[in-house]
Length: 246
Ligand code: GLN
Image (cartoon, rainbow, N blue to C red; front, side, top):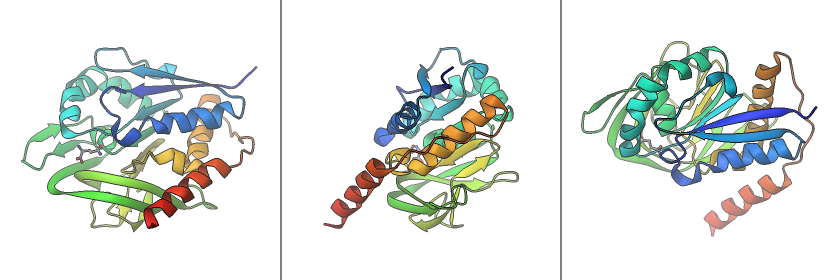
């Protein structure tokens, strides 16, 4: 029987800055090319989120305004189900604003205090000066391809609390807060990053890591993905980098 993988795209109409839906296209492509029957289902404001239905949950980035629109729904209506999924070791990929909303609080640069979900122990403080630019981070998740490439644009400075590890170390860019050289966060199987770009199409090793983890949680056993080259992704990334140098 064909492998099945079901992905939930939370708030696709609101959290989708800088082409974040490209992350889903990357997951879909590298799953389908391996013969995995991968389905992506959108769930937005007012719609039921069933955590047992999905192997991977995706939250993209958003401006403060969009985060304010969905906050009530995310925290009050979907919050318990999302926290249940986190503690059940479901795999999450959370980008920038989606990352921030999974934390305990977001204090906007004008001092407005936003209660966030509290699913992971991080907090964010917004500042007037935004971090904008290309990024390079170094992760231990994929030893043979440790460098992750992205683009960041955020006013939030995120600080990791007890029980949360960084996704990577900053090589260039600001990362979580421009102070402690950390980037992103890992809690159980929740993987968070400030990398837009979008993130996964430029970092196929992370795409495969997330696919593998999601299948392992689904099966409750180790999984080895079939080999799949990264020629197209490497060519795209190198082309972007070359264009930026000209
Ligand atoms: N609104 C948040 C911030 O400015 C997140 C931005 C984003 O998702 N790019 O920090």
